[in-house]
Length: 317
Image 1: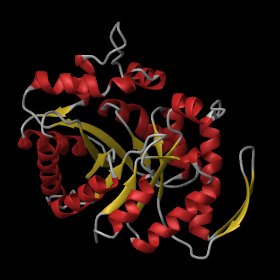
Image 2 (image 1 turned 135 degrees about the vertical axis):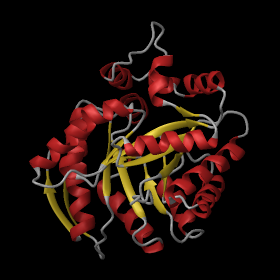
Image 3 (image 1 turned 90 degrees about the horizontal axis):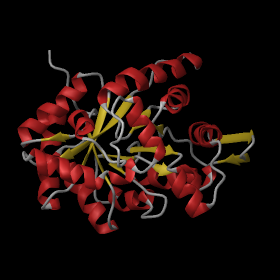
């Protein structure tokens, strides 16, 4: 018997404008994609607000954040936004939160970023019971909250994670771990065991690993690799990504750039049929769920439409 991929394949993107984002969410729904995931930088379009508009144009597609930088808003304020979205799209929101990047948090917000995981733990200890139980009474090192909300909601909360301690915390506390730019073998060797260790602490089953996959819609290897190196250079310049790549056995080159060896195991490229096959191999190779994100090459809208078609066909198989 063939196991359906429905619910196991999403699509991730960075909104450029609200009209563009709403249109893309609607196109993804028409293509049959299960979940659309928005990527939100520290400063940029507020993706929960964008999703409120998208909820009015769609009926089925689930709306995932991968991620909302948690510390840019108080957890009670986050709960208020979730309530508004749940009233527009009941049961469709998947709330991914995370620490975001130290350099943006420190440079833009001037936060003390010395204990981001401890901070995220407390954030979740406030937000999760407030949403799921309707009230929270909490006092910790970062937050002191006594709050109630008028309606309980079952919105699942996910943590972004890059290295073992973050995956372990996600396994202990949340509905799953959201990985970004992590090679598949690293996820099998590091992320999944860490999720399992965290789940054991909480005496629960391991939650799913949801893995990002960068995709270039071309059969031209040289063009795909050039586009990936240019568009992923931001991550190569981040020390914590550099450490993760090294842990995965693919350190950056002497100039701090992404190597062909890393792209050999990380990047998905080829004809639509080849891309479908490679994504299915990732699912069959131990990923519980994947959310490809397209790296545009020449004609972004056409390439998006091609990838949405691939993902919709996979989800329906």
